[in-house]
Image (cartoon, rainbow, N blue to C red; front, side, top):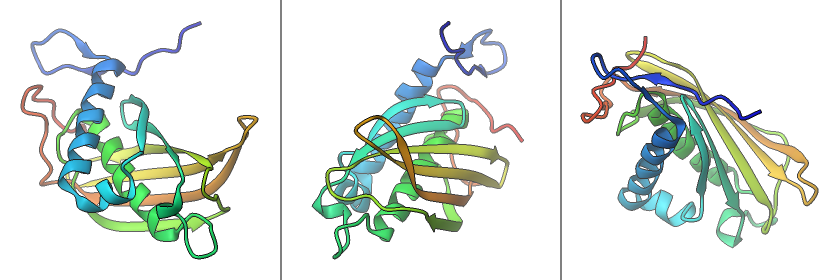
Length: 177
């Protein structure tokens, strides 16, 4: 049985919904723009890839290399925070196809395990609520083992101020409150 696609109502009068394929294409464009416009993302996360997007949820992958680890060879906490910052914006963009995703208000990370160079990470960012002023996003970073088993590395919560963030002008989609 094929998984159901999350559907977002189209702007009034459009009579259609936004498919996950369109949503993924939009989030990929936001990711590409973030990497181009922000040197920190382009330097630390140039190989982060988007694997799926649905309304309010993105799944990304990253294979760790030398730039991602600390002096002991484990995933650096600052890299984890950068991953959280970038992917929460993508989850917010997937919510209503906005092009900009606000500013950080609060971020909490819990380090549950470690990963080393060569390990593959799967990052799942889920928008719990995107309101008129604030968005609340949960991020889970898991290490993917050779057998496909997932081991938790980081759990995070990120609150972003989104009142000034832009909706996609081509769709006119408003933020659900």
